[in-house]
Each structure stands twice: as structure tokens, then as C-alpha cells.
Image 1 (cartoon, one colour):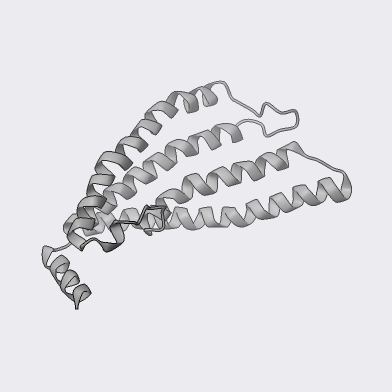
Image 2 (cartoon, rainbow, N blue to C red):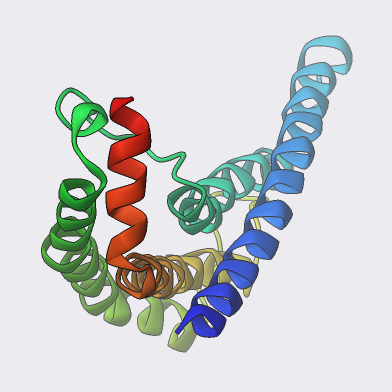
Length: 177
């Protein structure tokens, strides 16, 4: 189980690092748009759209990495003071009843949206915007993000339940001393 979790974590980490590089390209693209527009009075819609697409990709493809690194947003009012065994149950129930159903629903409800984009060979609605296949690729990243998040949820469950109960007892005892 640990090998499977490690393999999933490796995929999430690599995709997350690629998404992090997307942040740099997004900043550079946005700077280019601003400089071209305000200094040279040049505006290219396709360049603006690239910046927006990169923004979406960073969040969509970086979400599983953030979840796996435990860097996601969490309401930590009660969780931080819980014993490890209680945290395990909170993480398990959250994964089973919130993460997996939500990502499953998003995948299911986005499927026809993405499929239609590919079959219609969708291009930007803006004159001078990005042409096929870029809008379809962006929409496909919604499905990829759902798969990555589900896989990361499975990794979390595998890591939670392959750890020995003695580890929880030791962690609780060392935390209270």
C-alpha cells in the first residue's frame, strides 16, 4: 500500500512542480501584456488568454500537490488540538464523504462540457483569441484535476490506514510529555 501511495504522491509532486513553473510563465505573460498595452499601445487577445489559461492550470493542476503536501486550506480550529487517531478519522471521513464525491461529481458534470469542446473544435470567442485545441485542452484539465485529486485522496487513505496504531499511541504520548 505504501508503494502505491508513494507512486501517487510522486505523480502529484511532479505535476505540482510543473504547475509551479506555470506561475512564472503566468507572471511573465501578464507583465508582457501590461507593458505592451501601456508602453507600446499594443494588445494581443491571445496573449491575454494565455495568461488566464496559465492561471487556471496552476490552480487546477496544483490542487492535488497542495492536498498531498497538506498545504490546502483547512479550518484548523479543532483539528490542531486533536489526537492523531482522531485526526486519522477526520481525514478519512473528509476524504470519503467530501473529497471523493465532490471530485467525482465535478468529473461527471464536466465530461459533456469537455467532450462538446473537442467535438466542436472550440476556439476562443474573442477575435484574435486562441484557436483550437487550446480551449479544449484547458477544459480537459478540469477532468485531469479531478483524477489527480481522487488519486491523491486514495494516497491519503492508504497512508493513513497503513500506519501502525502503535505510531498513534507513541505520537500521543510524546506530544503530551
